[in-house]
Image (cartoon, rainbow, N blue to C red; front, side, top):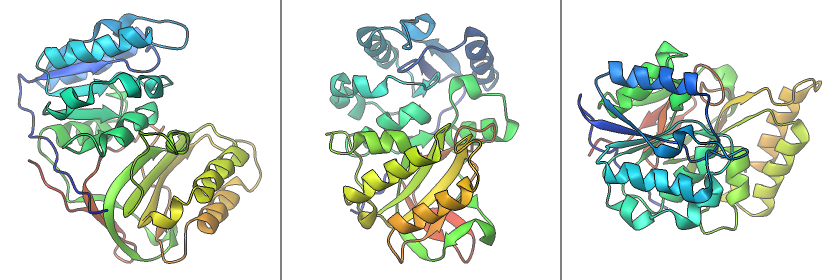
Length: 304
């Protein structure tokens, strides 16, 4: 698939950013810290009504969380920024007004459970989306905060990631479009109408607090579904607190990656994104080139 999308037009001071809680409820003090970062950058921040709502493990009912999305779209904001992840986005996918979102011009930002939105957006929205820190993560890392704000302001690096040869599990050069995010979500979307396209993808993966056997099961599920044979390359971020206490976890994880990803498909690991403080943002849906000899993942897309 020849998929390569532009980024939305850059934001300027005074533009509105909508803060939405599509999954689990956040801690209020963390919301306040993230909102202050955006305000200091010159943006007007609009909080969806459900940001302060908690219903069990969710930030409100499905209806309340969908209502938050509609509220922000009606407000004229130019970015929709998830306040946190957790769980809940998959429940909303069938009811999200995709036609309305497709006519909206703006940034969609988040990671972890927001992977479900990014995945569904690939074939439904005209612009690239941003895999990056949540509102509650802003300010924890100056580098990560500056990076994601830079994308919004049109400061787009041509080289998304640089890496040493020690991070190359399988060498090669590959061209494709960036797709991916949380491994658990990608595996869960297989066979649904919201599964992302795999053919020609440079797949980015990360996860958190998963034991080795569950990661193996997810990789194997994707292999049995024939997904790995379609991809151009695999780039892995931080597997934060995965395999904790398991002897030889890192080696077993890398070995299983190479077993399921076909020969000739480059694989790079340990890039700075995922459930870590230094969670560097990158766009999904843009054209990229992975060159392991040069140690770079380079973006080919451009701003609209």
